[in-house]
Length: 179
Image (cartoon, rainbow, N blue to C red; front, top):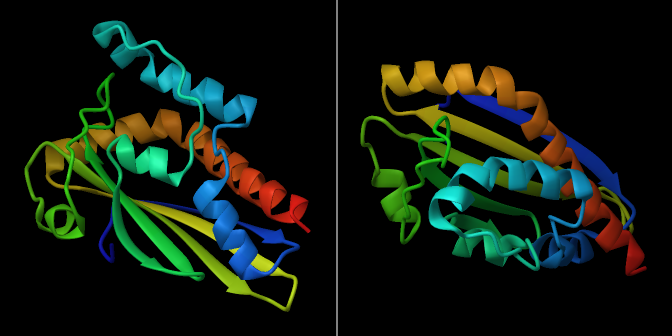
């Protein structure tokens, strides 16, 4: 997403080859961290209460994210993967819009929404070293959404960053434990 309103970037060094790190990225339980589970459960609380959906999701990996509304935008194994999500993130339930594919995501342009792209990139820095990075970009589709999202982001940004750093740690631990 070359044009965006908000961007957040984090990276970590992993002592494993990029292929192993990529496999861990695809399969690691990103919700294994107590912090991630807590923050995601707090975020989902309004929706859970309104839908009565309080059963625990057993494993939060990329496939589970795609089943929950993220769409695969592109994949260049073992170097990069990008997921997209459309919603009204500033509302209590998040107001997600399900997209069937990357083309539908790209073409979506309805006022009142924002598009988020969550990218993971891997750069091999030797036979057993990889730099794993994640970047999230959000583009709001109209001025009203931009204003609402920025208010929401002013509160949520530190927690969003914490989740992403914890996700990188989970992938790093999973990659390095397989050595």
